[in-house]
Length: 170
Image 1: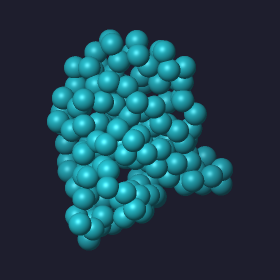
Image 2 (image 1 turned 30 degrees about the horizontal axis):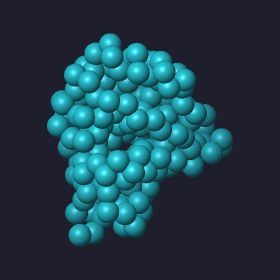
Image 3 (image 1 turned 60 degrees about the horizontal axis):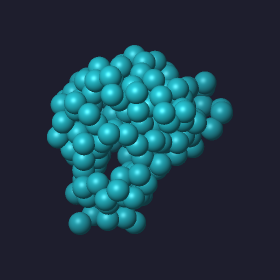
């Protein structure tokens, strides 16, 4: 099965998905925030915040694993993407690293299904098209060489992001 057959693009609320793990577009503190980060923390309940406090943060480009608590997803992978500063401070490499490190955690834990938001495109200001290109390139490359995760879902929260992903995979 090729990498493209293992990728789905959907328009949905990531907090409602029954998958092995969802990826949280987290900040370096891992203690919740706005956008998808705040929504995941709210849906998971206070136990997620308590577990995240024990992790001591996460550097940009890295990822950490927690339980999913009240979410339908069994686990949450907290990935810290870069803040967009014009594209001259290794933003593409840092974003690719956030995706790759999330995928590595999914592989290590043999997760069948993994759902990503469009990391760094909210308050971190990463241009949506550029971020989607990095995400798709990184995920396809990883899936070509690895059995797990068996399915990766790009979860788009709005029509604009959904259209971008669809156009890039057409």
